[in-house]
Length: 398
Image 1 (cartoon, rainbow, N blue to C red):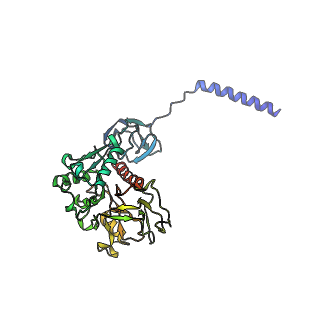
Image 2 (cartoon, rainbow, N blue to C red):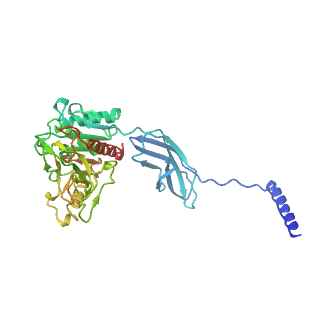
């Protein structure tokens, strides 16, 4: 009996509901006002969005989405610049208004066609290939083969005023037997006033620079650091035979406290590792091998961090003091070094006045063409080089 009564009640309610739908006018949901006139301008890899806010009350802010991912939460503004945007894919930018009552408007979307990948360049230290050292020529040939149409080789004679919009990163490799120490002793073609002026303008505007071997001395010529903090661990001799493996240690102070572990930096991604206690070198820590046994040039051009007269007031140790003084990160040292004594790979960060980023490699173990036979770790040297160039290109805003 109860079941029968329940069924009657349900049927009666259903009939009432059906009847009510035909008699009651339900209003459409109220939509929160959205932005209008959304437009975008492209400058390299920087996208500037502009829009018009409605005159509605209670606007709290604006959310920006790229391909449906939230990338910025802003106040009640009408413009936004997204820097270092991805290349080689179409980008959809959507702007939504957030209201104080919690409502979020519908979005307005603007499509930006795929940005081209950042191009890179190499500047040779001489105008003719016949004047290049074997390591410089090998580096040039590798660069051309590796980057193809996405790379351009300049010489001092045809160097224009570099524009970061055209080439996000510039590599300079100088590695010469018999060269004397000092930025003023570098090849005359590359330290001519017009060349240094062009390079300085490029760096200040946000072009990133990669300096290897003796070229690391240009870091002061370009105004990034004072010459007194330059690389003064220097060698340019003929070299000799060796049976050990030359490596680099990316854990600065690996037997100290604190340690500065940079093995996860993009520069070292995918490099072959020489494990701790390897039977040849027997280091008690892992390192990255760059040059195997054979005839090798002993060409250091790196930083003696103990030589700059830092005191405890300058930092926790000489590494910390140098980084603070020069706005840099000491990424790696000689393979056998476990203290804070020296910097073989250093990244100089952008500053207020100099927008470009720099990486310098001054290690003797970084030799692009081993003098005798084939370097068994040539792949690591080339991988380290490409990692640095690609990292600098990716970090560029252009």
